[in-house]
Length: 490
Image 1 (tube, one colour):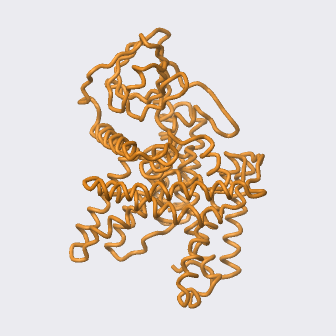
Image 2 (tube, helix red, strand yellow):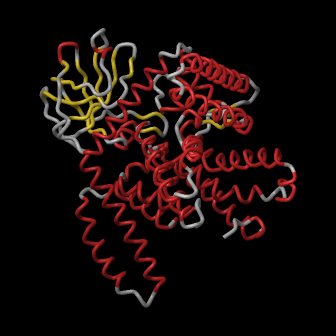
Image 3 (cartoon, one colour):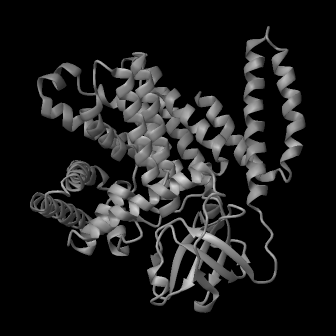
């Protein structure tokens, strides 16, 4: 599946140069027919399948790009929309994402900040009379704001003054079942965030807990985010496979019935997807939820659960649903991290003989964390240098701090929510939870003050980035051929 995933990705990139997606259908049909006639020549048939997948990616990208290219009139429009994100309060404006109820278009809205606009909440219906413009062009380094907004489905932006908008009760019957479900889960997330705020913890502790448990990062302080970035621990603030595997483990403790294995696995998968909807279906969470679903399905058949094929299949499905996800930074980092873990972890683990690891359980656990951290860094370091122009030299030390503490934090946060009926116990758990966050932040700040903590000013071109990954892939192939004992089983 991995070659097919690369073919699809290549086709999506090629879609940038196809002005009309229908033009790609004719060569696609021709190659499909030729491929079907090449049954006696399996190698040429494989080449034909790859070409078909490339053309599919090209057509899908061109089509979605045309759908997002909306021409707005040069006059104010009356727009009725529902708020679908937590409003972000800035110095002069309130920023919120809107979904129009009639055309189902996503808009980024900026409202002049005042006491009235500060009361806007997710799920509110708004009627706005303002100009709607295309997403403005803005780039910094390799970050392209227009492409970022396209990845998330935005087709326009608007700015409204105090007199340009008002609340309005809107019917959501015109929205799809999926859109209504996402909105309902986001409303529940908002209620959970309100419960967090009632715990009486510091703003810093609240922001970290909200980011790590519900994916709400708008309250994170810029200085705190910079500290996490310097020490190579930014991934812990973004919900990913680590967080979902912890949640999967917790749910399995309660629903992992051996006598009703099929039913229990179905309930576990539904719970995982419910959490994915709750946190907004970000690319990294969607990838992890999909892989866990495949993991649970394969577990029923006693098949290999986690493999490169599973990851590639997940990428293919996600890119077919949203081809522009290929350009999303979170998608790229998430998939490269997991791919590197799947490829390099088995090789690194065999450096220390298995019998020695089994004799010393603490060594096995420590070495396991080390190999996972090193493997993930191999996969993501070039991308981090490409986008953020830095390399965290103490990433391994940071992971030894954040991964155990993050695991404890997630367990305590879940306990805090489950003990809401017992205020005394909840207060005790919240106090411990807040202390864990403060300890984690303090330790990371200490690491950030170490000499040469971060190598800054790394500037990579796209070509250089590709060459680095080509070298990493070549090194993997060489090590597998030169040291066959380090190959992954199967």
